[in-house]
Structures are given as C-alpha cells and as structure tokens.
Image 1: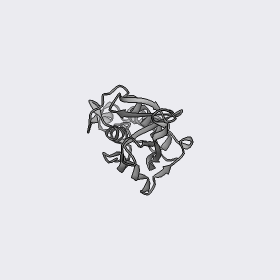
Image 2 (image 1 turned 30 degrees about the vertical axis):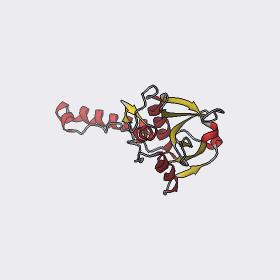
Image 3 (image 1 turned 90 degrees about the horizontal axis):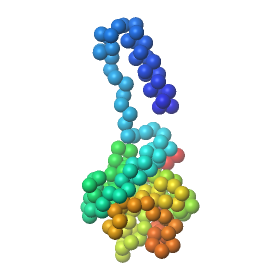
Image 4 (image 1 turned 90 degrees about the vertical axis):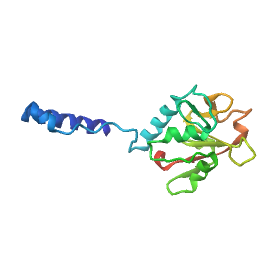
Length: 174
C-alpha cells in the first residue's frame, strides 16, 4: 500500500510539472519522507527486527540507551523509539506494560511473534532482563557479559530456565 501511495504521488508530481512547467515544480510540496513508523503491525515487527539486529556487537553500558552502549531495557527502549511505544527504562516496568490497553501478555514461547518483548529472571526480582524476539526461537538483547547479542529463548543452560513471559505491544499486534 505504501508503494502504491508513493507511486501515485510521483505520478501526480510528474503530471503537475509537465502541465505547469518547471517553475510550478518548485512551489509544489515534496512527497512525505518515509518515517520509521509504519501503519501495518507486520511492517512494524520487521522494522523492529532489523533495527535490533543492526546493533549486534554494540557494547554493554550500565544505564546505556544509545548506540555507544546499551543495558537491556535501554536497548529495547531505543529499538522501539519512533514506533509508537515509549518504553520505560526498566525491564520490570516494560514487563508490566502488558497490563495497559492494547498490549498483551504472552506466556508460551511457542506463541511468540517477531517484535515481542521477552523477559527472563536473572536477579532476585521477578524480571531482571528484557530482549526482543526476532523469530525462529531467537531474541536480541544487551547483556553485561557480551553486549548486544542474539540468543535462543530455548537455551537449556541459561535463558530457557529463566523464562518469565513476553509482552506484545499494541504497535506490533496484528
């Protein structure tokens, strides 16, 4: 649908230039630039996945929320910025977002969708870590030991036994 709209704007722009001459082209507004936000939840999920994977290798930084270094909740917050989801800088608070209108809790790993926030118990608190599910049993997160990395939600040694649940945000719900 976005491609059709862009093509239609290009055709209309070309027709206006052809009819009115080059001077009119300067007066016409430019077609809108493609923004990070998408209307279709599937587009949102794919863009979130690409954005998350683009930071693999970024170092860990306590309290970090930029491409120079992330902690886990700073990473998810950065990935979802400009996607209609203003995430708090706390994994526990991000977990509790499932209680808000339009968001949904996902308990079973087999029901995860790309873009879901996935949570693990890594501290004495109920939730100590958050990442982003990218499909095929994998998630991306910022860990203090390895920085931003891709891991398995089914990992039998660390992540699997620490699974808590997931939150599907309204912006990525289909």
